[in-house]
Image (cartoon, rainbow, N blue to C red):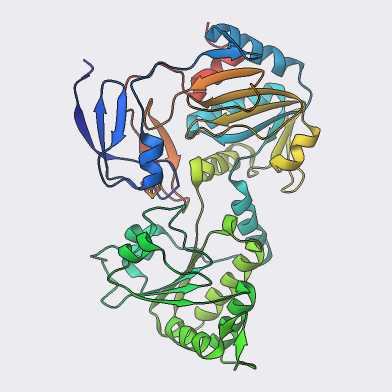
Length: 415
Ligand code: SF4
């Protein structure tokens, strides 16, 4: 029996930013949903649902039945020669169904948040890296280097998750060094028990190279490097070298030279590992990008930004990035189930499998409103460190299809 009275659901898992908080309190009353503590502002906004009617399915801006929308999407895809499946904000089941569909239609696959992922891939392809996990950072890291701007606006509870009050192995006096950024109010509150310093930097890559040099025993020439006073760089290098387990973190999507920063951070971790232990913890993971990428690897042997054609797959990180692939595509299938993110401007046909509150500048050719994993239906997403898959539960009875169901109906598998 469905309970329509007001009640609190404890320990809700959040699938929005990739950090995988699993302790949210959520108030559910009938079809209304709202955060009741522990959620960050981003999650509170994305969780909120009013007890409102679902939007219409539509064709060419005109409301239609669900079946008519599925049929029109199928017709557009059948006629397409170069479809692009982008956005890809969905759970694993939705991604699997889209790949199944593309086995027949062909198409390019890319995620809306892949820019940071591929900046990091550029670095790992050149040098490899020693990446750590959220659990390792929580329990062992004693010196954390945060490279670039405070990441808290994008990962609301990051420092609460990384530096809990009771780590298993790290002792008192955990240090956090911000390089090129300063903690905002929320980050500062979460780091109240840590020893926090901030180094100004105008060139993060140069500053990281200088830190690696200092850790390797070289001395610095000049009063500042990369905009950081030499004395402050030396103090940071000393703290990193003295750490039992240093961790370096950054959000490549937020950095102009994200690939170079990732490479230099990796080199610094390598230099530290000569005498102590260090790892990198790259940030990312919005809207299950890590899960979609993992799924592509299992299924095709290639990551995102891969084209499927004629039973074969081809990966090209530049050619099959959404912004480039749009120039060759004739049909865009835009998928965004976690947030109301509209598709990018596109001259060809557009099919949107989108969040119910999506607002469009121009109505898509087909709009199929879908439910959100973790609110309307259960699903699986991956945490940003790739090693944990998270089960999302349903908070209310679904009245819209999930992406997987919508795709099966486009494919004609369901009457
Ligand atoms: S920090 Fe991320 S995972 Fe945690 S509640 Fe906020 S959006 Fe959800």
